[in-house]
Image (cartoon, rainbow, N blue to C red; front, side, top):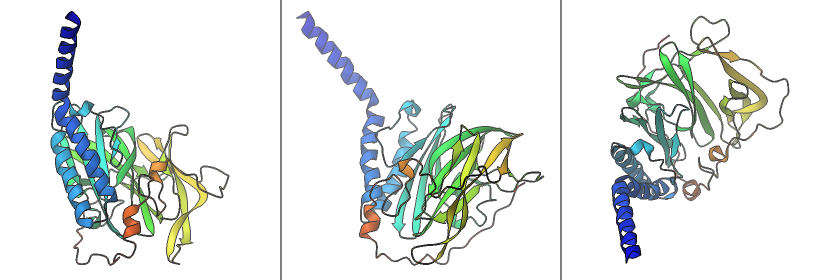
Amino acid sequence: MIKTISSLVFALLLSNLLVAQSPIATYELELKETSTTLLTDSLLDHRVKAHNEIKTGLSNVLKNEGSFAHPFDSIKHISIQYPKDSSFRIFSWQLYQDLDHYLYGGILQEKNTNRITVLEDQRAEILDPEFDVVNASEWYGAVYYNIHDFDHKDGKAYLLFGLNSYKMLENQKIVDVLTLTDKGPKFGAAVFFKPEGLKAEKRRLVYTYSAEASFRLTFEPSLDLVIFDHLAPGRSIRGTSVWVPDGTYMGYKLIDQKWVYQEKLFHEVLSEAPIEVPVLNTRRNKDIFGEEQKVKNKLAKASTEKGKGKKKRKKKKED
């Protein structure tokens, strides 16, 4: 009898625990299904709906107290990145529209304040991507795969390493610079310098390269460097001009709170650039998570005509 009562008490406690967890845990199951639709559904309308549902639903559920502690580790099709100090995390994902058009979604959640910021992809409106400093509503969209923190003159700052599928035959990898201010996150900062340069060369690094190539761009802890493949002119499978790795490496080293350009890091010339983690496999029959790109295969004959009539606005440059 005592054993039976103990079992009932344990079951009741377990049930109460599950109920307490249900808003976030239940949503994670929905998010898992929605993110799969976003990545694999053959119909654009379904993918757009999934993108919007993730942006709205995730931003709402993250407002729940204690949500930062929930890892959402069952979600495979959304990148979730934390800095070393775990002061925030960024959710980012990709919406495939057609062979030459992609839209990115992102949400930044800050740990101490639980401030939730939705990031709006405005790459098409950014005239000078390597120089413009923007806020969350003017975000240079990407799926982030690494974060590295560093001390900056204005306080703690973070390098955000990201990938976006720029066009059918070209990809981009970027290094954005995030600073968290009282008014919200700011993207881009004057931290990239040439040797002996008195003014910053760039506010963000943007590299466009052939989608058939493997391009490395990351922070390498063993070298204490941002390291990347040097790009040289090449030809795509369609004969168009593209940029491809030439087997040499460049980098940026943190010196006096500035990232200073380092030319030709190694004497060796590699015949083939090293491949990063599988999640970033950029072959065209794979998606950004290294899985078979079903949508592209089904829509291989989709129109590639680019949108017209978008008015670009030029933003102020900062030193």
